[in-house]
Image 1 (tube, rainbow over the protein chains, first blue to last red):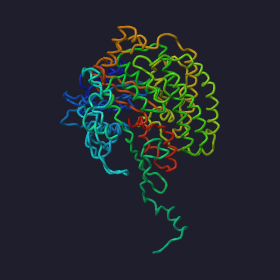
Image 2: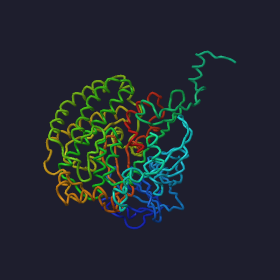
Image 3: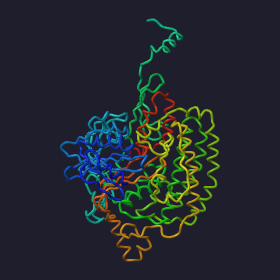
Image 4: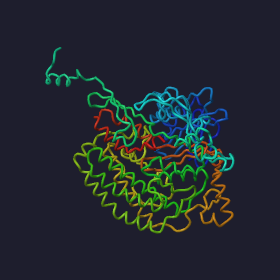
Length: 201
Length: 406
């Protein structure tokens, strides 16, 4: 682990001291230097495997978004976490596909779910949602129930995607949001539309 | 119009004059060999695959969004539906991830029961993977043999958790209930019967000329490519990389068990098949050790503010009732911080990245699913092979769309 300490000290674009929590090391990296940092880790330090890339939306904070890289070294059997802050007004990060090919789909997912764009990505398009979907659903300001959307023409016909009928979904718990009885969805969902549906069926 | 005869036409094709005419073929999302809803767009030159683009997302349910809106305990049933061929293993991996965040350790008995769960799930998943592999390349019988054994694993899951399929067996800091007394004899009986079936599958497939010719040298992925593409599990080990999280970073008491990690050499469909066969045998070894050394004692961690108390205590004691009430209505008060926990699941590395800002619900829960990453290797594996080889490649990758699309 002392080796890890020294190589992190030399990491290009490192911001601040590494944070250790539950035996895992997290390093903040300058957004402009993330590609250099990844290259350095792979080529100089033997971090040959990219385990995961995750987008995070810290809604209400500035900068709002973050991209988190979990980088693993097979020869040294250790993991390091790199974190890049992404401001809302310039949501672009350099793609690391040129370093690890596996980053391709992970970055597409982060783009799909959060709208973070990756510069020089070979094929940056949606991966889980369909092409042309207008929202980025893992953003905190996107409701759990979903949003009404046009569904493109498919083999089974076009249509609309409706928001989930349970007004925010079953068993939703937000810390400090009141008692369970108040959150009980059947309690909340007394809209006329639902009553009509019940009457019709 | 001049019509050329077939001999001249064949000659032209050989000389490459007809080459280069490409066809786009759509495979899936509903195709028997895509095991779920995977769509692959193939670019073909004759019958040869020039390029392949996997298209995923048909089973996307927004599990990560759902996780942000409920307590840690409430998300356990959703983990059943990730890799739905090994729900017990997902339950265990998720429980360890949240326990890592909370900084608690579970008692030895709990660890051993969890090891049994994970290894049963591994056998179940590999049995299905190999059965379907055989069926996809034309060996129908194997499927029937492996499914007979899987049925017994469902019986075991029912015995221990009460549910055959959607087990939701683990809790944060423990288990839903202790192992019932009749479970171990049942497990031992199963362990006595299983090797015969594995041997039978071995006889049906491993030296079967048709099977070997459909697999050997097909879908080869080199060691370097496999690492670069982030493959994990038997798909990585088939390419000759000895990396198993149970050995590299032992969790949940795996350091107490004797087992070997099978590694392939060629990285083709056949090696991936062989790795899975041997992994089942090693899982039997682990299960036997776990059954023999099963420790007594509590099966839940003592942290009352995190672990759900026993039902009997909730109904008779005041303090337990309060803990139960707080745990259920507000969720466990997890410390702020971020952790990544990964477990060696049947399909590869299943990781949970949890960002907590305190409180009962995760701020962000990212699921690093092995199938998602493994499917990315399809274009590399398929290039230059025939369309019919695609079926063998898909079967040897052994993916589950529930986990890939989340």
